[in-house]
Image 1 (spheres, rainbow, N blue to C red):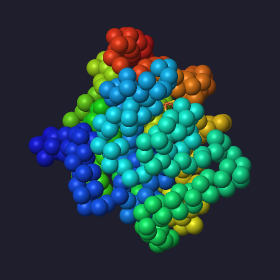
Image 2 (cartoon, rainbow, N blue to C red):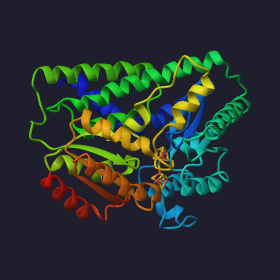
Image 3 (cartoon, rainbow, N blue to C red):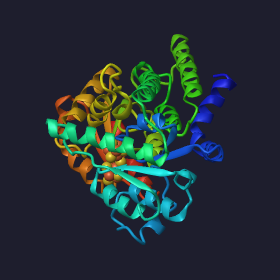
Image 4 (cartoon, helix red, strand yellow):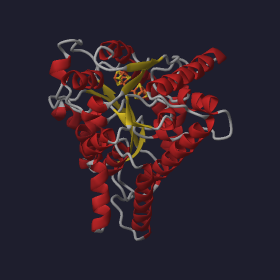
Length: 382
Ligand code: BJ8
């Protein structure tokens, strides 16, 4: 691969760190920043309010000891780290956020937001916990309208239908291109590692110039397709192809994805919030924008929904489309909703004849050896 593309890959990998300066520049230009935690946030509204959304999901254990002064130790590391960064002011994204939006997803997050509200301006969206029934849809559309009003009053702006439709187009285009990018995982034999796919998808969360991002990702897609044409493969027909599902991976990429690929397997698909759960479906551009946003976001197949049969449907489709040989689920410690769904997902994978393993872990390095051993045994068994 030539230098230009290596640099592009590196720049996406470093996007989170490079974004620190960018977010400060935006603040210096009096732009507004909205910190978001979850895939359920309709970020189109934030763009339509002339503000910039930025991901606050914390991916390091650095501030967990500080957050444990207020929060229980046996809480999901993502929640503890996020709150810890707000407490210690160590995350520039949190520090520069004019507003933070959180949804009532899992109990841990929703209770943490109460404390976060003592430190920052936090707007909570009441998310229904089922996609079924007209009342859920009505409640969620109403919450979207309330969020719209909050943004308008906070940033002294008017979100017109026109602006919102423009923002929907922008976000749809971004999702389409990212989807085309991660769909490179379907190529068999593979030309891109799961680690590279993950780093680039994560980098997109911290990239503010979306036109440049789209252009660069399209160039990357072209490069990898050419590699396929030229038979520059990373794997062969015998390489085990892995799909990763479960909790967000931000804090455990090096701990999970690297060891999977070091065993000689390759990660070809992500059915989680960094991948298909977020990017697979677009917002309908032909109906009322609030209704369209309501549909898209309420249908995200997260384990906090009950029932959550859409996760199994998406998983099943991806197992077929990506020619998957094994499914690895990642459950962050104390994430009850994903941990409880494990049984159902295991059953489903068994019915599809695909080996399945669930790994429970946190952001620390203490179980690294154990995680590696389990991954090696799983890949060997495939
Ligand atoms: S849409 S996966 S980003 S809620 S914080 S539920 S890991 S115990 S992050 Fe999530 Fe939105 Fe769903 Fe995606 Fe579990 Fe931890 Fe809760 Fe978590």
